[in-house]
Amino acid sequence: MHQQEAIYTDNFKTIKGNGEGLYKEKGSKFIGYAFPASTVDEAMNHVNELKAKFHDARHFCFAYRINPVQPQVRANDDGEPSNSAGMPIYNQLLSADLWNVIVVVVRYFGGTKLGVSGLIGAYKEGAAEALKEVKIETEYLTEEVEIEFPYPLMNDVMRLIKELEVDIAEEKMSLNAGYILRIRKSNHALLMKRLQQIHGVKVHENIL
Image (cartoon, rainbow, N blue to C red):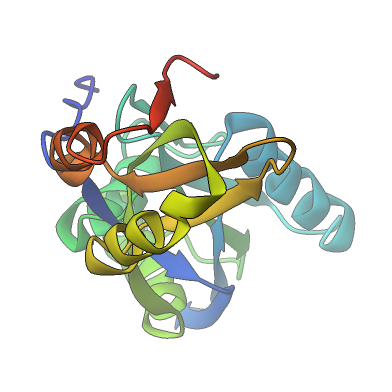
C-alpha cells in the first residue's frame, strides 16, 4: 500500500471512545471494532485483546492510520485473500480522513465462502458499522514554549494567554513567575511575536 503523506495543517480528525458494530453475510459474522490509538503498540494491544476475547474466531483483520505528522499506516488481511479485508477496512479510515485510529473486524466463518468481492464488501461494512458508533472530534497539533517574567508583568501575560487561547501546561513559580505554555502550531509565531512585545519576558525554547 502507498505510504500516507503527512498532513500540512495543524489539526486532524480522530475518534473519541470505542465503537462496535456487526455485519452478517451468509452465516458469517463480521464484528467491527474501532479504537483510538496514538502508537502502533497501543493499536496492536487492541488486536491482541480481541484475539484473547474471541479465541474461537477465524480471522482478525485490521487497519490503522497513526501519527499524521510521521504517518504509520497498515492494512492486514490475517489469512484472508490478499487485499480482501485489510484494505477495505483501511479505505473506511481513509474516506473518513481519520488518524490515530485502528479498526479491527473479527470474523466468525459461517460455512459458506463469500469470494473475494463478497469479502471486500463484508469487511467494508463491518468497519463502517464500527465507525458509525464513534464520536469524531478534531485534535490540534501544538508546540510548547517556556516563559519566565517578573511578577508585576502577570496581568499583561495573562491577558495575552487569554487572547490567544493558550493553554498553561505547567506552572514554574520561584523568584520570577514562569509557565510552560501550549499553543496550536499555527499560532506559535504570533505568540512569540507578542511575547517579545512585553518587555521583561524571557522565552526558553526547545524545552522538549
